[in-house]
Image (tube, rainbow, N blue to C red; front, side, top):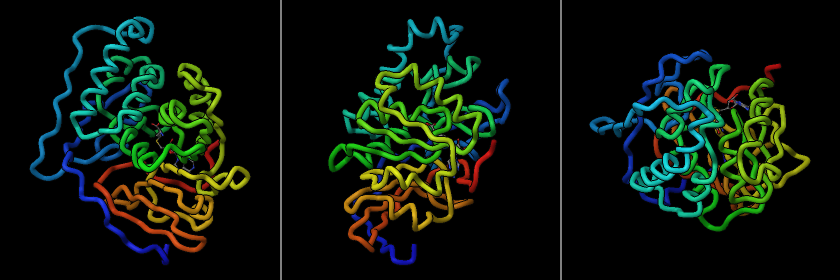
Length: 276
Ligand code: SAH
């Protein structure tokens, strides 16, 4: 990333409320706290939004009846927390997030929180999903996108509501298989091409991509991946280890990229290789 020049064009967002996560335990294991979830992090002195725990018992079956209403509430909360791109909000409104989490957590699916999906991984917080998609769609909606770290497939499903060709890679076979099942619950599933493999290699056979979203945090991104971005294309990724920030990279020419540092976040790590 040596040639990348820092460029701070946009002001820091005002909406820096973080999230707290109450889901220390899940029957699918892998406790999730803000330390290992895909979420914004709370700034010193900021107040976390209060989640309204539901008193009703939901299962994935009966949640279907309520989910449209709960999703609308989730979307309204994202709007209040600074997500202003109506196309992106509409995309989140179309995907039944409760089908992407373990049945035991379905009643929490529409809270603005990361949740465990097994294999010590998490489904990203809706706010962060919306934020990353808005960043790659702000100039124009790309015709194709690559997502690295498909997890349970939720973000790929949201992307498919906006973008005709969604390529997504997952390195853990169990999650890749879970994502294949889950995406069937979303409209436009046929737009999603899921791959099992190491996302750090990208998908050179389908490159270049006008948009790339990385859903796990690394210290740096391989040059070969940056080269799979179209000239003029945008890549958004969490970068860092103990301290992570969202970064927006634009390919400005054949051999030049610019990078903007955005808000602090906390993501699961980007790892090399695959896990059978
Ligand atoms: N996009 C997901 C978030 C999944 S969490 C969502 O919609 O909620 C991040 C995922 O990145 C994990 O499933 C993890 O296994 C995966 N991951 C980490 N390193 C990777 C790599 N090199 N290639 C592909 N996937 C990777």
